[in-house]
Amino acid sequence: MSQFSWQAKEGGEGDDTPQPKFKRRGQSADAVDELKVKLHQRLIEELDPAKLKGLEPDRAREAVVVAARALISQEMPGIVGGVRDDLIAAVADEVLGFGPIEGLINEPAVSEIMVNAPDEVFYEKEGRLYLSSVRFRDDAHIMRIIERIVAPLGRRVDESSPMVDARLPDGSRVNVILPPVAPKSPTITIRKFQADKMTIENLIEMNSMTREVAEFFRACVLVRLNIIVSGGTGTGKTTLLNALSSFIPDTERIITIEDPTELRLQQGHVVSLEARPVGLEGKGEVTQRALVRNALRMRPDRILVGEVRGAEAFDMMQAMNTGHEGSLGTVHANSPRDALARIENMILMAGLDLPMRAIREQIASAIHMVIQIARLSDGTRRITQVSEISGMEGEVVTMQELFRFQQTGVDSDGRVLGEFQTTGIRPSFASKFEVAGVHLPPGLFSENAV
Image (cartoon, rainbow, N blue to C red; front, side):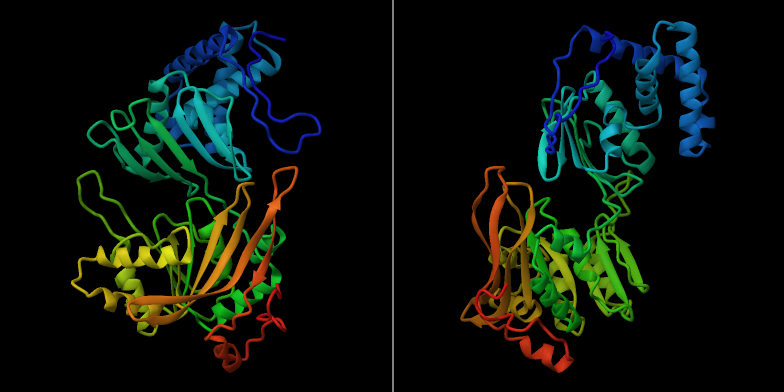
């Protein structure tokens, strides 16, 4: 094996589950890094950056590859074959892309990339975390990639402003945090944008829900129930919201409000609004609350809020209570009850001097149903609870559970076993289905029907 063959491989023969395998950095890896640095510096001297910026991405990469191949032939004739091709690709990633993590960004199965330190790059694949074999040279190398991410977006990140949220051109979300706030190293977290959103059929195939539960959700959207999707980080809230939105009739005007934009609705009459952070001059911020309030003046049939996370919760509840039924949104919470508590706290963030009972009455009147989704121990994402908001008893918002996922165990491969069950409770809004002529699977609300 050549001393320059540094690429680590994943998995093993006959092993369907990707298992991370990596080597300690040795002399060969350091030698390759030195070659990449030399090539990178020479290419910067040889190529005109202005000309590269004016080219299409494929043409720009082709120009860099041609120049790198010529330099290697002239000054490093001993490097040939696959090693030369790998070196050229790595240098092109350094010049035009995101350096060592470019391959992970381009890998469709990878959903999240986490750079904790130069020698600690993790990624998420199929709901599980793995340590990658890719490495940065040092903190300065990470900082160069960070600058390449934030500079085109007009954002600034330095010691005086050590944290930034940004978005890549493809829609992927990026969070950066620098020392001294992150003492160990500059860190990068990239949540990749999935261009092909999962449909309801995909979620049924993945056992995220049963077909009967999906039919129930379709009926709820058609009769214009206000629905909140609740779950933790990375559980698939936005994916489920996008799938639920497919049930909205194409004849309705939909306003989506997000930070950043992730929903991909298929209807023909959709207006997408996106919150904007503070600019370099400290001005220009547009909050989600301002967008929700503005959306009410845009003649919406439905309002979809990608994630309710602040004072906009008050305006969202107001909209649901004043004729904008059928609205959908997501909330970070671990249970349906916690979701209501979070919305209550976010309404308090609006700074309005409202009694607690008035806030809870507004929530109980506005929201019809909470869908809880969770990521289980095997990495799968499943709906775990569906609860109806049934009203108020004294000072408490009352709820009743309609469906649940009952875990029964874990198999020898670590996969979670379980089944969806119905509690047998018929929701109070079931009469709306009959009035609208929307049909549900027979016996859906008989106990253990699903």
